[in-house]
Length: 140
Image (cartoon, rainbow, N blue to C red; front, top):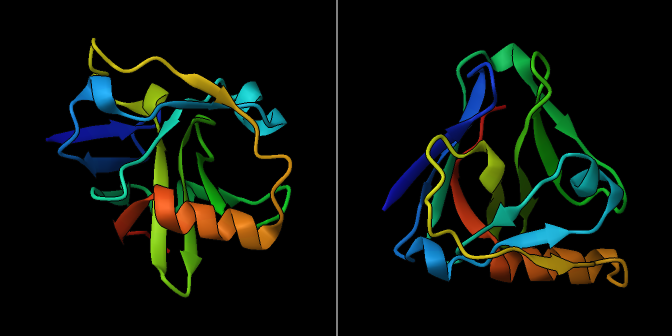
């Protein structure tokens, strides 16, 4: 199945491909201050694919915080956070913010609150490489 999403003004977005039914998605409500402030709910599928897009490339803002291991993708015009990506020695991986889906499935799995505060940089990069979705396209 293929799902699309974007920021409010349509400048940046994504296509998320997964064979998992929406009720099987691992939806996470990260408890960090960034994700709580954006009311972000993230999901990923290690067997899926993500293409991030920038219809207006100059409006793609990358933001790093905390351990600085991933780029959080935000629209400079409307402020919506659409997802995040990490580049590592094993490849590029990402998550999407389910709130940015164009047509969120009605039967989406319930979000589980989760905290990653105890992770160090190495552990965080390793977890993301195992749990996040391979990214096929990531604009500069």
